[in-house]
Image 1 (tube, rainbow, N blue to C red):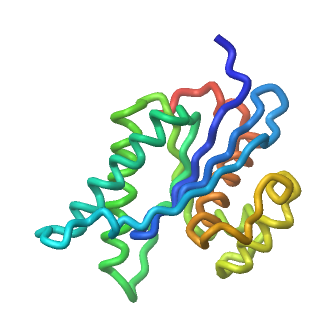
Image 2: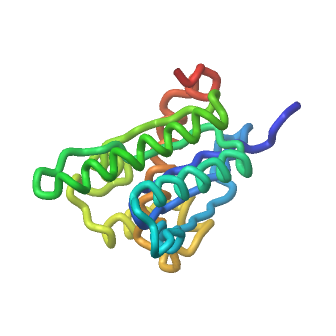
Image 3: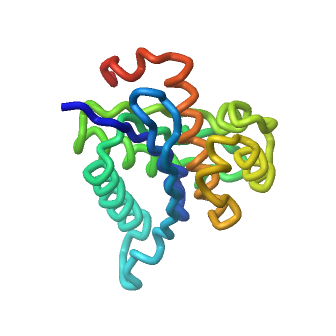
Length: 186
């Protein structure tokens, strides 16, 4: 069976979870659709809970499984954990979120590819400097015609912008290395 499009999903992990979805034409490899969502994981945490992080990870797992089932993506792009000595607790929490996302994807569709990319690489591939702020990322994505023509970036949260940037980086990686479309994910 022939699919006329394939999907790439970018995830900005955190308490405010950004989801960026690119739909790509299978023949031309052009972006034909863009979606963005933001979830606040704390809205799903019960007040009387004993372990807030566990509840967030549980909800994150459900959301990712839902994305895999709904969109059947070819690839996910996730921001990799990075060491921030000023906030070690944040690094640990981010690592747990990334692990939860990876496990949910693998358990739902073991053939789906996962691209983990450092934040500086994402910014550089989208035309921003390694220390670009949120507004600069929005401006740089707005300067990309394939994105600007398909979505109003001013209506998207900063986490949605980051996740769209991740999906776009995965798209660029596929354009640079087309064998990623057919290679095994592991």
